[in-house]
Image 1 (tube, rainbow, N blue to C red):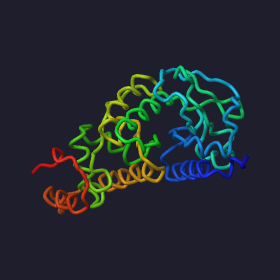
Image 2: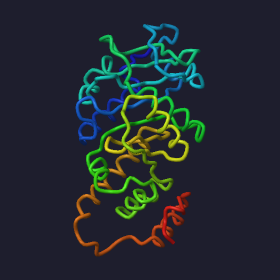
Image 3: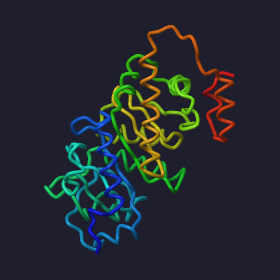
Length: 271
């Protein structure tokens, strides 16, 4: 059995958490990440028949029964993940009933997965129904994205359109746009259900006055989606109070999307 601390999925999770903390996206214990693991790869580092303990998930995720997930822990600080992954991360397998998680590794100090796990599992199910290769769900509190929530209409078309105008790359990186939810209490099944419904249509979902959810096939894709939104939101916040002299016009956004061959939300442009 290989040393799990050398596993590529542990390393990429540690690096992502460290970068998210460094960028100020995940203060204290804010934010969470879940990664659906490949069973064969995980089996090189874990005895998949050895269950340390069983933890209720608080949600019925039967379609994910038997699936393995690497998940950040509740109350854990992202700044500590890289130095102590075994306490701050855990690998779980969703039980046959979908309502329990079998802990295979991690949460060594007696902890458990993030309180947002139901929202993550719901979003995983939604994204898998759209693209079977989606395996990452990432939640964070990027500063400028959050600030923008307070001064810009929380409307999917209007928010997406504004962000597309901020950086030439935006319509290419997230041509499917951004889903938006109003403020809702976090850590509840209700916000998880609402997020999962949006995830059927979008890879990015803004939680009003809270943060953002991103989904992707790889850690880089999910991270890059949020990173691009945050850069665009930063440019907006730096310029919103100033007279607009130049902008990227809608016909130019259309030409850009078609040049790169991406399927974009045509109804989000004013043509």
